[in-house]
Length: 72
Image (cartoon, rainbow, N blue to C red; front, top):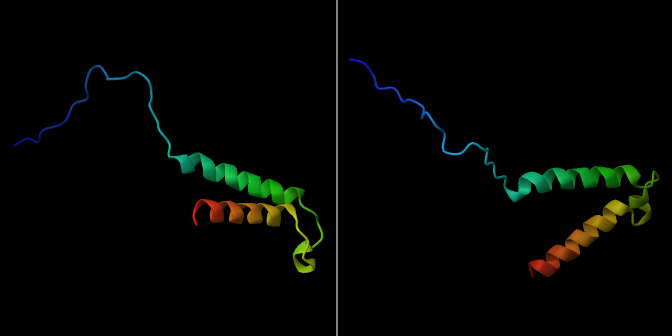
């Protein structure tokens, strides 16, 4: 007794490739790149101990205010 095998269709339905990515598949690498860029361009001295506001802390504060505004 032989098992049935599936055959591929002779003519594919579409000749082009249709790939749809979720929104986070593009947003996460961009966010990681921006975070690393901010870390590289930030000041070299330790401002966290002195209470200074560097670009990373400003970005985190901006995100915090944005999220507080969007989701009360």
